[in-house]
Image (cartoon, rainbow, N blue to C red; front, top):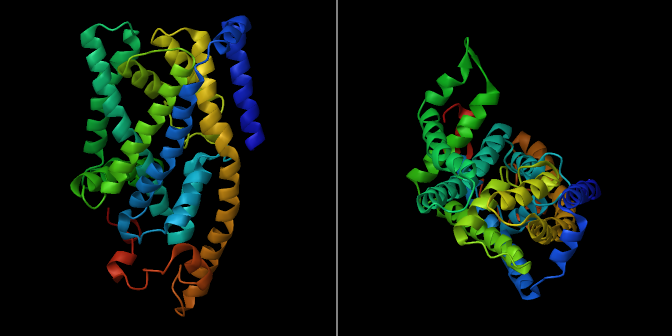
Length: 355
């Protein structure tokens, strides 16, 4: 699947290159400022500890015990790999379900993770779009107005719909609960918890903010590598538009889709298409191609841990040992804290029926 993802990304690049003109793209590669490549590499490396921090914090929502850093690190690195048809969020769901034996809570926390990503990036893009509109910047207005208007309306509606028992009422049609609507609303509803308890979930906010800052820095480094010098606001709008969905939430690491969207988002902010394609290619080399090998290794190491977690749940069903307390898994997680947690904490709100 990783090879398929690389092939899809390569086809997307070739198609854009043919539309742009192969000669023009070749000339773009003839004007490289290689010292900016260090920024791409360093910033992309910084995205991983930042995302680990956010992931570990979100995983504790619903009263679940913290997951050990070695496990979280493997999950995060594997999730950025270009081989999962369900994207990195599919790996996240599988992992959280195996560790905590709570499929519904796992799905809601994965949705909450995606919501948190956009709860940080979208308001930033909204503010930047408003500033660019006021300044009369040379950016397509049709690119800026959706950010300026839809973000506050969308988040306002999402927070309203997911508050209190409203999510439960909205997800019922003709007396039947629609899970396809209920669970996304619960995922958005986790934002209420993160907002009400900023100290407890400080890692989620800080990690997500640092992740976006590092990845945008890598993107900016790629632009400067090929002589493009957009203002910070222009770069942020192009980046946010190119990531209509994050690479962790898209199948195969967003192969193909991301290359097209990011290249044309740069063109829409009035940057020349040929060097824009070259810059996106350089950026994707570091966050798609280079990460493939460590992601595969992390995924291979993760699978025995998940299998052992499932086995420990099964063996713990007779009361002799609780899930996640087997000696083998403890070596990965560190000392289990589940046995010491109060009963009301061990049971997630989703399992007990409360939100």
